[in-house]
Image (cartoon, rainbow, N blue to C red; front, side):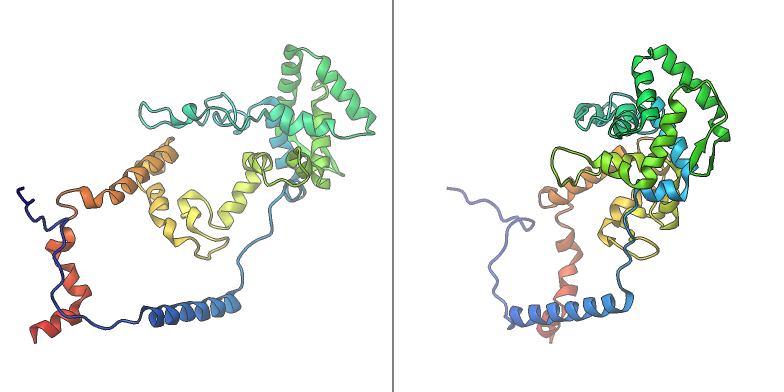
Length: 317
């Protein structure tokens, strides 16, 4: 049988040179101890940069007008979440594609959110012993979609003049039906902390699904201002930062890098494009041993002589 020719890129010749003693346990122990001491020292000096959790209660107390304005957009279905698209609903406002590949649509709606019902009507229905709110909800249920649209339009025409006075949301309109009651009561509910719990409410006592309160928060302007202050937005390399100016997940630099350069930093499909780019780069890294030319770079560049320079210096002498 004819033997296959030796290929220096994939075949390895038996080592016939010298050997040097190396105690991997000793080296590993020293490295672990050095990192442990460094970690504990830095933790003691700088502490933790983590901030307290941001809640709807924080938001509604810090900026009740922004909260109430956002609550109205949830009710009339014009917020970012309401128009987002998959996986939350069947809209198309923020659907991203990679050329002809409609990845977001292929995933489908698997975390369904109806902002009118889930963010406003549903939480309000959980309130008890409030006759005026009960009457407003009944008025809403019995109204036609055309009537609801008229109420929404009346409120929308006046909400730019919204104020928060003596614990109530004030909007100068008299033709908004129960909408004014809804927005005011939802704001009151948020300021008490009850809305946070209502949006977390599930079938189990404990829950870790924070999707709804997070989406509600993201629809307003206050949350974005916090992110900008803490250097966490996309154009601030936010994904690899801790809160404030602290460096965080440095290994995410390659992913975050693409958001800072054209065409990614101006594209409406930036998330999909960056994801696609990273998948290609990751596949390329995995396939390096099988790509002719690329796999030869370490051998032809002789970088190994730099790594094992002491060995080669001994050989030359």
